[in-house]
Length: 218
Image 1 (cartoon, rainbow, N blue to C red):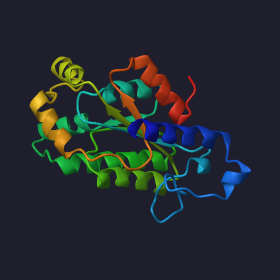
Image 2: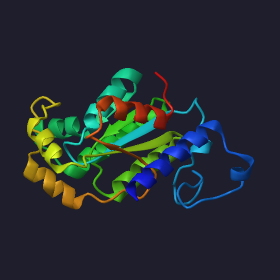
Image 3: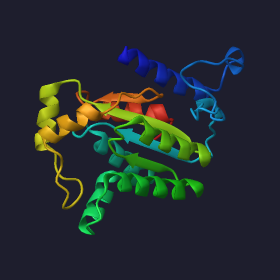
């Protein structure tokens, strides 16, 4: 079912970039609604190339979301806002607070998007309210929104990745396997449209799929 959902979300995005068919123009579905709807879901057919983009990377630690988000930022020049860096900065000032780091992320995202600067958010986004806040910001700023959810379907591979991954942020210690498992128990399944990428697949394959999903050409 999860694979089917991934294909549905991917197909919706691809078809939307080609433009809606006459049959689809007046149709509705229960997966993606108009961005003007009260539910604040997002309709890819409403997007134009001139709009800024908000790309949200979500997933528990050790599944490769930062590898993808950092690469996307490097190749596009879009503003990268990783929660790990914010957590580290707050910790250095002895004002660390988990919710505060998300609020800083959202504030910076809104500031950039209001100026038509595309943004990449990189965090676990454990629960639905955090994800909905990001979607609401995209809605308010008339930005395109894409969610990329990273996972690793092989437990042994995932554990090795956690044990061997380097520290991306200076002075910030990556979560160990025990902490990763604690986060996993709190991680709510995604219900809104998203692209699912599996870390057991080659990075180039995942990155190419990501670029296709968001409609970005190299």
